[in-house]
Structures are given as C-alpha cells and as structure tokens.
Length: 444
Image 1 (cartoon, rainbow, N blue to C red):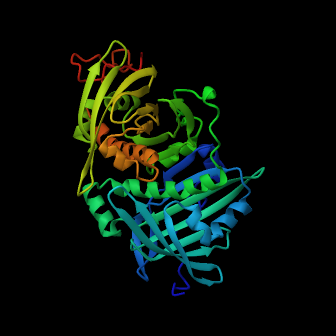
Image 2: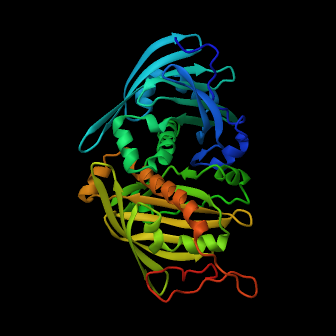
C-alpha cells in the first residue's frame, strides 16, 4: 500500500474531541443523534499527498444498540458484506490487505425517476490500536475524506456506536458540483446526510424494524417526540455551540387514509444569539421567511380564533430543474415557547410537528424544529420524483431543518428587539393585519 507510514488519521476519538461517551449515550437515548464538533486544524491525504485543512469541522453521529460491542465490531470489519449492509452499495471489491489495513473499492448506485447516478470511491480501512476503525479516501468523487468508527461497551449487552467523518465536499463530482452551485446550503446538509445513511444502516442491522401491530391497535395521529432540555442534558448546549444537533427517531406505526404507515420524525436544534422572547417572537413571523430562507418562495398567513394557518409555497432549484411544493399548515400554541402544527391541505398527504424554544443563557436561545412528512399514495408529479430518493422522508425534514436553523441564526439577531414592559416582562402584541403571526404570545 502506498500510504505514508508516518501518516496518522486526523479523525479524533470522541473523548479526544472532549465528549464524555456516557453523556453522549444518554443524550442519544433511543434516537439517532447527529452533530458537529468544534473546528480543528488537520492534515489529510489528498490525491496521494498530505494537505493542510485549517478549521475542519467533523460531523458526528451516535446510536445506542442492544448488541455487544464485539458483535458490532465484527460486522464493521466485514467489508465484503457492506453491499448488503449499506443501502445503494452496488459493488464491493477488496483490493488489498496488509496487517491492520484493508483497501476496498465501492460503487454506490442511486436510481431516480429520470436518471441513475453512480459514485466510485476507494477507501483504506485501518484497525487502530485503540480498537476503533478509521478510514481515508484513496481516490473517488472527492479529493479527500477521513472517518473513524468507535464501538463503546455500555454494559448489559448494549453498545454506543460513534461515527465521525470529514470530507472535502467542494471537490465532488461534476453533478454534485452543479447541485452545490444551485443550492450552496447542501454543503452543510450533505455531511449530516452521509452520517445518517451510514448510521441508519447499522440501526437497521442491529435493531430490525418490528412488525406493525394489528390495525385496531394503531393510532391515527402520531405523537411528536419531545426535544431534550438543556437543563437535563448539558452536553446538548455544548454541541449546539458548534452547529445544529439532529435527532431521528425509529418511526411510529399509524393507521390513516385506509393504510398502515410508518412515520419518522426529524428534530433539528440550533443555537441563536437572541434572548428567548425575541427569538420566539421573530421565528414565528413566517411571512418574512422568503427574505432569508431560500426554500420559501411565497408565504401567506391567516389569523384564526385559535392559532393561525400558513400557506407555504416552497421550491428547490437543482440546477437543471426546480421542484415546487405547496401545503397549508395549521398552528396552535399548546404551551409557552412551543408551537404545534399539522397539514390541512396541499401536495403532501401529512405533515406533523412543532417549533420549540428554550433559553440558552441570558442572551442566547436554542430553537428546535421537529417535523415528519408523508407523501401519500397519490402524489403530484414533482413528489413522485421525490419518492424515488432514498430516505426521502428523513432527508426532506433534515434539509428543511438544517437550512432553516442555519439561516435563522444569521437573520434573527438583526431583527428589531422586543421591548420590555414597565414591570420588566417582555410583551408581544397581536398584529393589526392578518399576514403576521406575532400575535402568538408565550403568555397564552
């Protein structure tokens, strides 16, 4: 193998990154957790040469599985089985083995309604002395990429799986370069999406989906998972300082529209430099979203006796074509700092979720969008295309949440402050026009 003998994979272990594995396992709970680590300067192999990468941000993922660590490691080391383990892996070829190293060529195939995409990568996997499994990109559709798998025993036959990865997203294939040019935010979303696909494959392998109960035992409406509280999970606040924190549940079985459905929720939390009342008030001014949120093409709000409704026209430009979707959501406020919503009309059959805000110190807040969607049995032409995309339900929610929180973090601090009353409390007043939603007050 032609890797320099003195080169060390720069991907840190989770403890080297400053994260306590026990706290990480507690935060993940029974959901798949995605996050970013603080930037660090690294040196990576790129086209056979060492290259400096200042301020590299590693994307992390964590999952607790009811399987012993030895079994998880054995599965991770079975590279020949990756074709059946990792979705869309169409070819695996072991090129070379040498001591702790194994070089493997992979082909991934994505069959869409109008085209088929293939990606080719060759990785060198290394069994590290600490028991982790690291990898670096030898060649492929990116110039450089590194990663590390860790399997940490939790006792009682349970394990914490941690996956950290970094890739030179800007150097990818011509097709992906075109997509990034059309949607620059994909540079933020792509690492989270890649981490999700890799970890979700292990969740499927070690936590097989349970069969749906009898129809008469299934609810018609889902339960929106609660977003963790900073007061109970201090690690959440630390991770949120480096980037969005994402939770993905295993799914809920429902019976509606005359069929059994499995619905998965994606929760994206982000830290903003705004006090809680200010962040809450302005985050609900949906009519202003087209000013900073590229997905929102047109937004129309209408007040009601209880809550309000919003007609959303959203669109994603993908270079050579654009996808446009319309839906109407009904919003209510079940508790202070929380706004629930569900789909009333539009191209998607179902949308459920909530906005939830909590204080993060005196001058910062943590906002979270939890959302689930279901395209339905008879989608529009645009959504028929989307149904061919792998994990379309999760990736759509992740895409909207990550883009929204990233853009909001820049937009919110620039908005006019909420003024306190004489008693020191913050006040929000009901608007005089129906196209504003600032009438929603945390005192309700």
